[in-house]
Length: 454
Image (cartoon, rainbow, N blue to C red; front, top):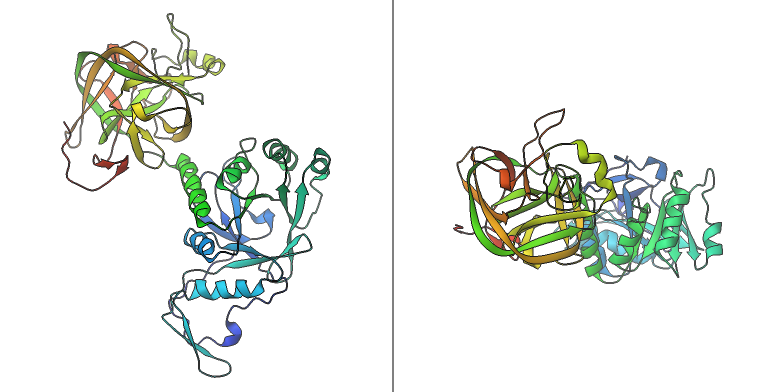
């Protein structure tokens, strides 16, 4: 595995050691990899796809940038992406960008025929250029690292098959359909060591390719001239990477349960199935959000709806039945906060079809889910207050008063643990789970300011 050298001062380097890339195809045995098994780690590794590390059941994702825009290059390097594709006649651009990356504020003074002196040296990165020649891609040492294929018909797609001992990667340009061809390619290449890239002209296209058949293609060639696309794609990776983060949930003890009267409550149906012990984070104040259980357990009065946040049973036996339903959640009134990706919150009343929320389980493991439907209806509400043991702070939430609405309990070990307590059965002294965070918010983003919530 190669490494990137970040040098604070390169004064006195011989000219022969400076990066220079001639206009013809030149190559490097290194490429920048996004280690994405839904993780934000960035790894430098060999361009040989067999050396790409994997984690869990997802392969890391590779990102290469194809652009002639300095703004795009700068945005990419600042976000840890430094492999760039150049046409065969743009070697001087690769040379220029290498100097810009190494010395963003450079001025060069020749000391002798063999040495140069740089002022204001600020080494921030090294770029790794790849050059196109006759539908193939070469690194800076002249080795072929990928071959381009255009796909505009089913016949062309069928010809795209993994070949034993194929020496390089595959870059596809889907000129017609995208989703189905990408899924077919994922299926065909799933057992191959070859990394298949797709040329994407927008972050939305990249998302389609990265999520095909859940596993996605192995890499993206982002061909853009607008730096906004780089920013948006990085934001997409950051959101997906949150699924690997474990939230720190806190035990809190119920101090009061009070029937409050009628109010407009929000019912959220998700596009994902939830299991026992999973739900959404909801609360009257952003500083403390309660983990509200989904309606994924059976009862004698209502069918299981694991796509909806609502719970009405504390046993584990009905678990095998949940996969025959969707996902439903009765949560709280319109003013309540709910956790969404990026460490943000929004009001329940702001949720709508297509918006993302985070689903959390008893152990703090989170995943992103898409809202399928939101219903606001007038229902009886119940006020729940709980105290966190360490600092004695009180937290509260107004929730629909119904047997199908429950709060998730701390994990109690193996066997048949209690996962949730219906709000209709809550009593003083019961333990539930919540997340503690900063209370001051601006458009859902946590900020540092004085605030009193009561």
